[in-house]
Length: 415
Ligand code: ADP
Image (cartoon, rainbow, N blue to C red; front, side):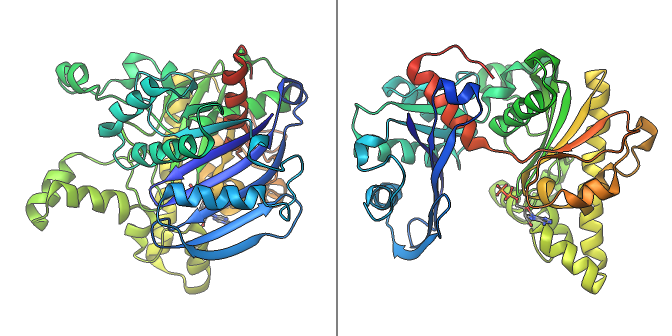
């Protein structure tokens, strides 16, 4: 089955076409056929498409909205000159899987999209005002273009964390606010953490229930996840993705009093404070230079910039704090797994984040750590390390495609 995986952001559209079926899942031989990214949807859009193994196609076009952007992508996908194996026209796309950010308490697993599900995703908008409307734009666009005969599936970032126990997901604020507004920890990056758990299980030949790891997704957004017996026990993001680890532009953990203090003393509105915490904080806020870890490391090396070092050290310190907290919560961890753009590519950050955890018996093999660049899947801890450390490149799209297939054929969930 050829699955179109769609990931729509407020001004972006990402896709992959993945060929999969149950045999391919069982033999881990599903194939990504093509991928694409359209940025700046709504103005002069930047387009980058690629058939696997071929040079990429790049262009810039004014694409007014997500539907026009998707139509543009479909035109390229079905163009005979593009030559995606097995894809000649639109009928060769058999199902569509949508990455949806917030499923709140309603969506605990992937679901086939119908009007009721769309209403449910709309109901979650107050919890994810930036993300869910963008996801819905993708759903509406695909429905208009493909019609009702092509099944569409929604896969939620929050779903993997639906196993987090009440004692962990509740905030210690009056209970009525949970009852009235469902204010609680939900967690995000769920598909990525689930993929890490899945790969870890395959690499070590384990059953799902034997997976006891801390997964660290370090990209522009960053989150940690305590995975116990194969299920999410805790994660660092909360009601929204603002909580937890320090990120590119987000502050992560903060004393809530800062919000009131900033609003009063800087004379700005609550919305403006949240814009500061979401868009002008994290690595960018501390360094005053950039939210990009690669550039920050370069700045530190070339110019010995004090605030670049401070930002990086704070970033690593927060990771260490979560590793410690999750080791306590899990009462036994076998491995720590790094993923995401930073986790997969930066030996320096991994070394600095793990440094100081020797007391727990965690020790990197410097040579292996230095070899783990450009998204290589490998073990990077030393032979003596009591807790193993891995780099596992994430592949959310693969799980999105597999979930789509399973929902469409109504298969029992297996991973
Ligand atoms: P997103 O969360 O948007 O998917 P990514 O997972 O692609 O983002 O991660 C982007 C981050 O990864 C950026 O901060 C980028 O600088 C960082 N990154 C990518 N390669 C490297 C590298 N070699 N060293 C350090 N950081 C890197």
